[in-house]
Image (cartoon, rainbow, N blue to C red; front, top):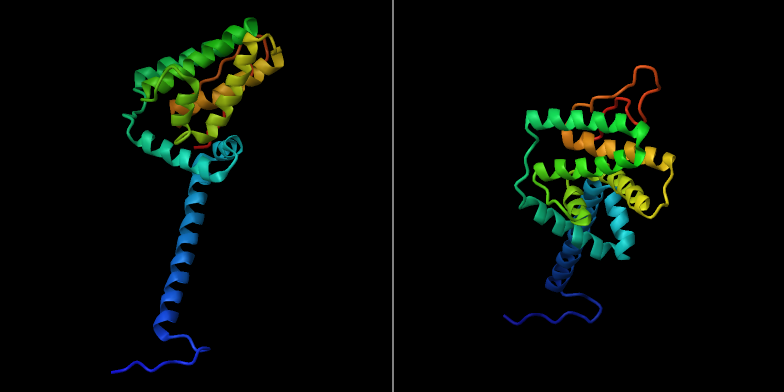
Length: 207
C-alpha cells in the first residue's frame, strides 16, 4: 500500500506523535529536575545555599551534594551508647561552667568535644571540612551553627575575637552537641549565685 503524500502544511501523524512524546519527556525531565533540586535544598538547608555561592553555580553544587549523599551512605554510622551520651552530656555541662573563668579554653574544649562525638557516631575525624561535609547530610541545620562556632575558634588563634563572640560560639556549639547527643535536651549548668551560664537554657532541637 502506497502511503498517501500529505500537503506540505499538514504534519504527518507519526511525526506529530513523536513530537508529543518528546515534549512529554521534556516535561517529565523538567519536573524530575525540580524535585531533585527541592529534595537537596530541603535536606541540606543552609549548606545548599552556602555551596551554591561557593561553587558559583547550582550544577556543581548539586553534583557535590549528591556525591556527599553517596559517600555518607557508605559510613558505618551509629548512635551514641547510653554511657557515652551521659559522659558527653556531663562534659558539655563542665564546658559551660568553665566558660565563666576561661572563655577561650571552653570554646576550644567545645570544638574538641564535637569532633570526638562525631567520630564515635561514625563520622571521619581530623579534618574539619571533611567531617562537616559528612555531617551535612543528616545534621545540616546544626551544621550551620557548627561552622559559625568553628570560625570564631579560628579567629581566636589570630587574636580577632572578643568575649561576646566567644559566648555566641558556645551557643552555636550547643546546637551541634545537642544534635549529636540525640533528641533529649543537653543538661544545663548553673552557678549557685550567678546568672545562667551563657547558652545553657533548655530548648528543643530542630531535627
